[in-house]
Image 1 (cartoon, rainbow, N blue to C red):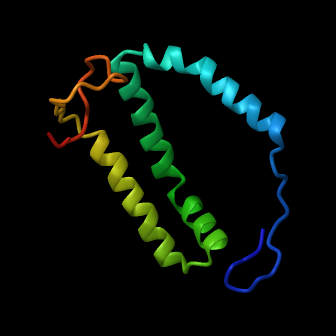
Image 2 (cartoon, rainbow, N blue to C red):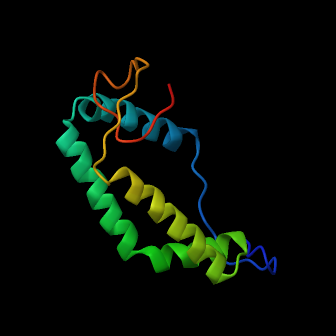
Length: 116
């Protein structure tokens, strides 16, 4: 990994080969039925846990963004803040339902505004 602002090598990382990618896709495919069948309460719990983790690690995430994208730290912190706003939006609790059928939602109300 190179630092975009200087071109210097900042770290060395391993790339995933086809077997690793196949294993990840397989794991996600196996996990999907349980997630799809999870209650709205369980999904909300996971999102709230994510929100807390994101907030606790915001500075670390900003430093990684700055390092990997060559941004100044203040810009990276702004990106993290915008990401936190998105997470906050989806954890507000206001529910708006779609008038269009969504084959993946299975009748679950969507927690975000949708267009008709």
